[in-house]
Image (tube, rainbow, N blue to C red; front, top):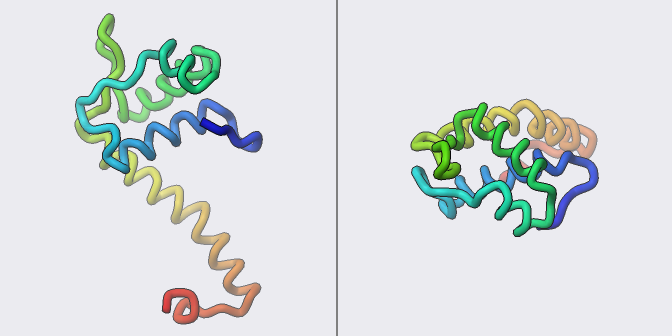
Length: 112
């Protein structure tokens, strides 16, 4: 996994897990790697992975079965879709619209 210096690594790990859920690579009820295994796999400190897992757990996307590991929640795909759609509309669409206005582009020209 290659990391972007402009975004915290734990957030990039969260994004990666969410992308894998949306793509179907990680399905509901499926087990995800342990904190140590995932940290070793991607070359980061297990504490960083733990922070990511805690954030995903707080969001209801994954859950922990004590002594067994972390698993994808049954409604994880819907939660991720809702969160990412909301973030897209709030963060990216305004930037796109601003850029379109600066370039003098109409929606018809962009979405031919």
